[in-house]
Length: 469
Image (cartoon, rainbow, N blue to C red; front, side, top):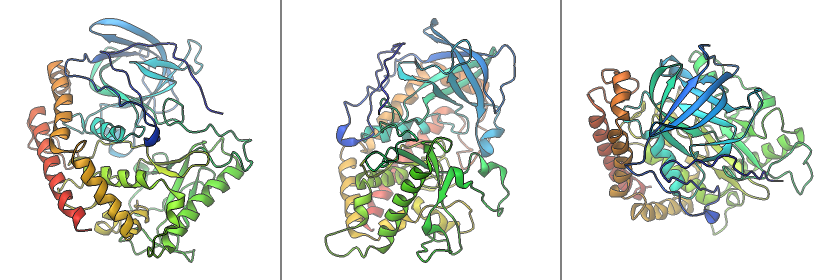
């Protein structure tokens, strides 16, 4: 059965009312975006002076102010989150869980977002524009898919000002988020077992930041399964594009989680993914039929590829990549998540080049792009769908002017409210080089100007590169 929830709190911030759907064919009216004069909320976290650990969550109190008016007070469990170099930042990101006064989970609405219990306060730090993650979420949602809703806030923790954060939903299966059937452990019959599932292609719970380069990647069978296409122990061996060794690609159980999914359900979703990969590998791509297309929502694969390539996200396909399957439905890409290194801010900030070919350029990197994408580009029909969709998007949603207008709205809002100024007074980062971000940017204005020019040039490159596929 599906969850059905009625909001207990209905605070509207500046008239923003969000709506979304995981299926583009059923997408409701697009959400209203914040305007440049929408106020930015202030959040205060109070832990009574107790340091916030990485795990477990501790009790805190969240207070939310809009235009200096207190609009909400809510007990929250809080912990620090982050992997790799993000853990080294003094501007920490946090995972939140809305609680009762007794520490029990409690679904609430915050900043007009549909009620839930799990939230994220993402500490935007190594993106000097402050808006790359927000932009990636916006563009995926604009295509009619679910992306976590969010808003910019200014955060203080125990009286210490922390600057601009993105308060966001966490990716969850929910009729107001990723709308999939709620698959319970006892639903193992043929009528129920086909969905819904959420899988992640990612490092194993922070393993990326705790390993030395070259160390073996360890995944726990209880919590993941290995692609048959990523092991030389299988006859059907199709390594990640550009990699000439026996790498392994794993899919993590997100929902149902590893402690809730039944063995029969594991077998079902593992077999489904492996059957898709086998069909994709074995397809001759001749004639009018394609066996692999019966397993996937091809439109979502097209859109996912185009957005990840437009953003030139160096983590694309390898980390923070989600795929889901509803009951009696196909494998569908998304939701999109984590855009902090995208749009010219990552380790691959150059304008040119396909990010699906990451392992071709970096063959010794231990984290691999699934073979899907290189193989799909061998199918003339998939390439044709890419070209057609790109032309459609470039004529409206992804025109140069449409993208630059969206950036300008975020930038102007952060500027006019004074939030950006206060953030960079707290965090003087313009002389720091985090990845390949612009060391020469001496201000928020310069970084946003660089972002605008980078996108303009990336669009022009993709216009030509797609025609040459």
